[in-house]
Image (cartoon, rainbow, N blue to C red; front, side):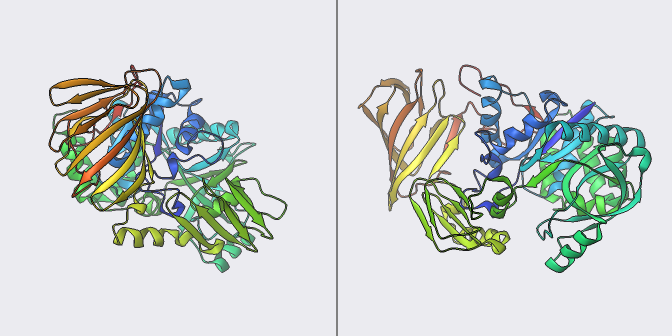
Length: 496
């Protein structure tokens, strides 16, 4: 059977400040209301049922991924699988473990690997391409990659150098060729030569292979890595499965599937055809996916643009006015602003690195942080205090928890709250409040039909989010180690 594996574990550092470590770009919307992750799932659904779609996510992103899945399908949810990585590595360990878990269900499975931050159209051509690739991968026992004919000298993508033509496997829509070699991201001069020569395609990072073929090639290309995968295989389906996967991630090398496997294999073919593929990798990608004004500007949000050309302006709540700019990127959020030339868009990740060195919260989260039960917004903060607006969705509740270093004061602004405080259960209505002392078990729940809005005042010597002990949680955050191949069930009575 055909499975789909969606890679959704990145942190999207080149899309800072809209993308943050806890809410990366795959959760953002760039075209329409749906997140990029939801659009990727919807794209493959006509070909692969949701039960055979697996999402690889990091432990920091598992809850938000479940929330997105539960909101899909008109609120009925999508029963996709989650592969939660205990540690963030590169693509080869993630694909290796996910393929191993898929092979447990179907040793002859064919897997289509795609990224959660790509935009691909038209859908019918894309599905036909995946179907054709799956047939070839199954019958010819090869690894298929999708190549994209380049239309500009792009330095931000890797390339595929084309080898022997394979007319027997080409169709009216798609061309099949062997891959002679993978080429790393080139400089501008080489990229121009690739475009003019006609022998290179962009490497889309999408792959199709049979799991049996994948592991055969892995044993040839990375024997030590394959041996460590086999150790995990022996634990699959036993009580030691989680521990084996956790141990694997502690010691596995951080290898990409391109470098670790595809570049070393002689069984890699490429399919290319009339699909429009866009890798939303950095802010300059908005030039490809967004409408422009008469002067080539991409203007989104609350912005005023005067005497400006070929500039990307992304505004939020505040008015952002730009005057006399050329070939620039301006991004404003409620807690951070980015200004840089377009040709340095790939370097935005260096800003994030500097923020991380300073332990700045702006690298990790927005002022508004989404949770599976709702969201909160930091209104103000200073030494010994933090002020939040907390919104709890109808029928949802936070974990039963305790803080060791802070007390809290809650004021209900809208809705009704059911509060657990120690052994007591208390109902609060609009304008009523309650104190939560340090080291006291507590929980807040929305039993109503409308959102519950609470103003929370935190006071203490330490106010970060990791000062939390959870005793019970509807969203599986109390588990000692992440689950490995679970189904994200649709919500029941408003909970996960």
